[in-house]
Amino acid sequence: MGAVDEARVHKWLWAVRVFKTRSLATDACRGGHVRVNGSPAKPAAPVRVGDRVEARVHGRPRVLEVVRVIDKRVSAPLAAECLVDHS
Image 1: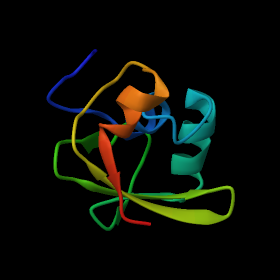
Image 2 (image 1 turned 90 degrees about the vertical axis):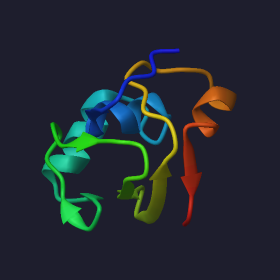
Image 3 (image 1 turned 45 degrees about the horizontal axis):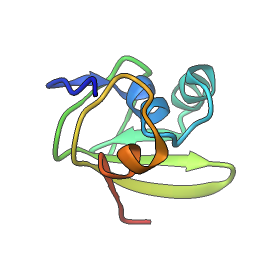
Image 4 (image 1 turned 135 degrees about the horizontal axis):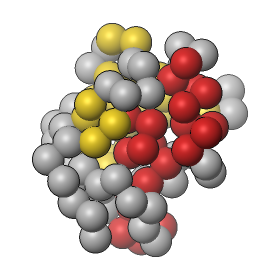
C-alpha cells in the first residue's frame, strides 16, 4: 500500500484524500493553511505516525491524527484507515 516511516505533508494529505490533487495540497501548505504539531508546515515538512495535522480545506478546519504514513494515493476505505479525524 506504500506504507513508509515518514512522508512529506503535502503528499500525505493528497494520499489520504484530504485534497483532490497534490498541487492543491502544496498550495494550501504554501498559503499557511496547514500545520503539523502546531507549527506552520511547508510542503516538504515530514509527517510521522502520531503527528497531528491541521488543514483548512474549503474554508473548513480539519484536525487529523496520522495513524499510518503513506505516500501513494489509495482507495477511500484504505485512506480512512490512515487517519483519525478529530474535527
